[in-house]
Length: 253
Ligand SMILES: Nc1ncnc2c1ncn2[C@@H]1O[C@H](COP(=O)(O)OP(=O)(O)OP(=O)(O)O)[C@@H](O)[C@H]1O
Ligand SMILES: [Mg+2]
Image 1 (cartoon, rainbow, N blue to C red):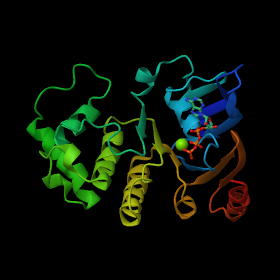
Image 2: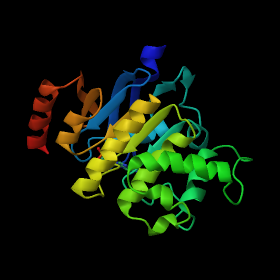
Image 3: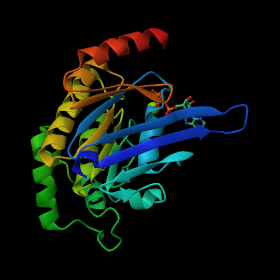
């Protein structure tokens, strides 16, 4: 169903179950996102935000519950198969790129993610044109730097390219885990604007974690607040009430 494009049912994650370190990181969360919906996930440190995204991407296995995307069950599917249609951008700009390769080579790798036969040494001319056209609207001059080793670029430049890489393989779902947290305020704003433009243009279903309350207000269609592994508030639209809950939560953190 379109309305339940991503459907999460009573998902639970207990780390180190049965030991003295037992932690209930995600406590029976049920929620859904409709196709094209852009949800922003907030909560204090240790609330379970990253675990929640890791359960969806498959890098963490749930102790209970079900996840389906576009009517396909994910729980039994290994992470490498999910990565064909679930894209991620994380906090560390060096995550998800090959620092010793050029910008164009990284983009080519992303384009052919999951298809073994796709990537070849050297990037073809028509691909370079495509990559330039994707990078130019970002307004960072990256279209002129296709042959630069990506590891030499700044964190913000890498995150901008990471956003383009994320959508190149036409994923069904985009997961952003504090992807602007390592950037200064100005670059963070720029990457969020790029994020918004890319998400809206592609109509991509997206979950974005942020620690910044202002960003949570400005971006997305839905705000989800997590505390102690539970959703304590889920609001659509511009969400004054949810922000009040957030203020309360912050006092406890
Ligand atoms: N691999 C792990 N092994 C054991 N416990 C873990 C593991 N990963 C996370 N936890 C615990 O699960 C809880 C949720 O952690 P998680 O990283 O999901 O929180 P978060 O909301 O992303 O926090 P932050 O804002 O600090 O990134 C925490 O109590 C954390 O200590
Ligand atoms: Mg986290």
